[in-house]
Length: 260
Image (tube, rainbow, N blue to C red):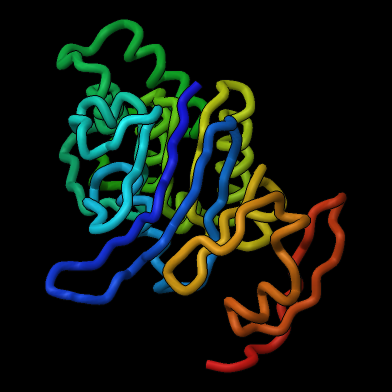
């Protein structure tokens, strides 16, 4: 069983003495969907980039199955951790199917196998991308780009998948569909799926556990019914709210801004 553990993690950007994130301790070893929530600028994206060696922590360590990721090659990490950025700056002058096939390169072969094609075909169907398979990636909308990026991450077939706001460019229907899909993958395939979400209600409804970040660190981890409270929303977002019970899960009804 794959496990990812973070110990006393801290990171600062170059030429800055101030830590963007600090003193983060977290251990995830059970399959499930884990949603990271918190206000803008709290270090959510920085945190997940430290988890997969895009950024190198200045303090603490990230352990993947007991090994410090500093000791692992990018190929070793990519065989265990898939990553989907919030947006892509890549310009793929290639069909959608080939852009998704890039996710299979983590498995070490530069030649496309029958298994690769079968996996990518299933993932395209899963993401509703079949009709776009031969369209140029550059000719897609922002939402379609996001769906291709998610498909590429899923096609990588890693035990851990980390996503930075995967529903950011999607309409409401596809936000719900993608989140339900990720939760189902975590349950069915025994994956650890970690995603940043700015939609508190989606996180509350679908996450097996919610990870709360505030003031540059992780302050709470647990099921949404225990973690998401009116006091928490008031404190970290400075927004008044009311929480109602939605089939055992908290649903946040937002009020007015308390302060800027």
